[in-house]
Image: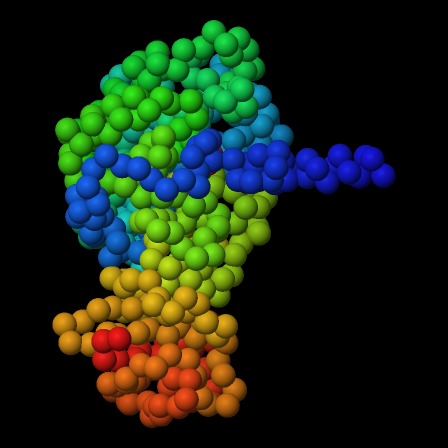
Length: 452
Ligand code: FHN
């Protein structure tokens, strides 16, 4: 019995996702669920976030050396983009992956088109993940894709240009408090450090890593690529002064650059929730980031793909709570986004093609959530527009909204020329709808009502 208990206790650690001993997602941020305390005014932050709040939906891309053989190394399953740590691969061995990394099928225009066809409005690419390898031209550190691979191209430059051409915003992810290539990057109790090459955890000095690598590379990222977002990850042991110094460095170079909460110490423009959607949303700008299967990086044996239905429902649920959805793809070592990822995203894009008005530029529901679906809203000059996204289509041809709103007009978003009949009743308003759901995933009823 006791062995079963031990296995159950540590079971989550076997999952691809990085989890703490208590089963919570290991984000490397001791303030993961905090209310942010920025030293900028809400107005300044709201202005910086204006396009982002309208966008609602973006593509996260985890791409690095770990993708070379689908998070496998010498036939061993590294389980995720944490492969180097999971298999305790010495730096000297891991660097050899760079010697053969040659993503000949990479095509920035194609990647951006996948995002665009999915209805995504921005993209965030891992510029440097925990393995410390820079997927960009980093003059300050030779361990980078231009200098250390036979491919000799700069994917950040190509994606920045492709996003510009196709009208998407481009952002970069940067692993802040985890860098398994740097001898001074320590973490909380060594929990996520490179202790196989650098075992003396207490002799490491984070500030040396911060000065030697973080600040020069953040400067390079801003000045070379002008990203719309810097998406920091795993702040770990960064001090409040260092978090503040990073924000000041970034905003001196580009005051419009959005910075997420994982710059550390409860700072940043918006809160990050990982692999989960907060039940009641958040009292601050927020974004849920989520994988399409079980891992962020391309894991060649992981076919545990989420359905298009669940992805659309997540997007609608997040938007109904005023949040953004950053949905991840993990391209292969050859630079190809897995076809199942492309297919799923296209299904979401097809839904948004018809119903995007219920997501983009909307704000959170005034009513909370409904058993049959969710609501988003837009405030007009004269009226309020409610978008009722119905997941569970009523069988009796009537959709009941239990709030006393005065209806100006009702229609299906997919058939907006045709009015739907509405009738006020004791608890609110009843809308007469087709017997069969026009869209099996979610059908949107557009309800224009007087201000309430
Ligand atoms: O450890 C990383 C993980 O690999 C992935 O990059 C996620 C994405 O939010 N961030 C960390 C776990 O929170």
